[in-house]
Length: 419
Ligand SMILES: Cc1ncc(COP(=O)(O)O)c(C=O)c1O
Image (cartoon, rainbow, N blue to C red; front, side, top):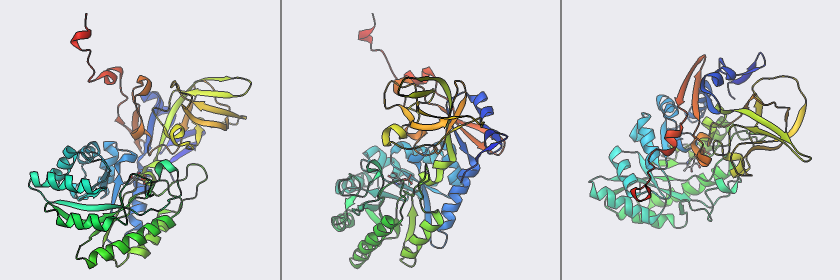
């Protein structure tokens, strides 16, 4: 569900024609719908209302300050995986006691910042990290709240790059070794065990792997409780998928009700870390067709957004629906939609049947709100693009387009090269 629709043959975001926004901010740009974001967060959050829970929006999906503020206003917490995301969450107004900090490679300075901020808990991914957090907490006179991120060795049945809960993945502590990690944590003086965590993967289309992970985690919690350890938070991570093409992921209500069945009465506050399901379909990438060309084999539509702006198609082979901003009846042709970046892997769509697009017209690359801007780079010295948020008939540029000065900020030509 989203609020990008044709009205009078013009694609609109809520109450504003996309073309109008393009006239004001130029192309390419990311465009987000406020009411879609609110609806997605609220539906997800409400789906769990039968039990104590906290929805920690996963900042990595889209970490713009405006979005972080929006979810904070709705009562959400934030799942962060770096000092930078922690900084953004706090700048966005998140309550520190609703922030969880995941990630396999937390640095000491990041740990210290999180401890000083007073976050809810660290999701710890190795025994050495337990020692590191204990040492930093001791040095600054704090007690660190920790959960162990358990790797339950479950196949989430998604793309291998976004599977995280299998033995071959770098994430978490193997479930068989987790009890030893908990015992270690219980002996370290500056740690306080508060929870258990897992995240098995992203773009999940089936709920069964999550339920199996929950079952394994609960078994472990029961064993830990027998040893006198108190587990107050059970964090099931994020991962619920969305429809990009023809996938049929469970609706959040269906997803939640299966989880609720498994956790009701277990004595833990449930934490969830959704990203994609909240922002994915709430954003599009708007780009302009620069040129078209063809050879004996192929037709190319060359647009002004490239893999540096939206890497998902070239990185994961992902599908994004492409719509012309102006709807009109015309013949369909098969084409590759490609960007200006000097890589053959720079494409937004391959061999796609599309309305015959013309030079100068606008397209919308749909479902680009998650892992779009947040994975964008400056490759080929391309300034990162603007982000716009629309609410009804109001629009706001929530991130300015970078300029060339931004590209070289921090770079210096050393004295010995100057002649
Ligand atoms: C630890 C953790 N939590 C939450 C998420 C969010 O996942 P998604 O955007 O699929 O909901 C991720 C994504 O990879 C993650 O690694």
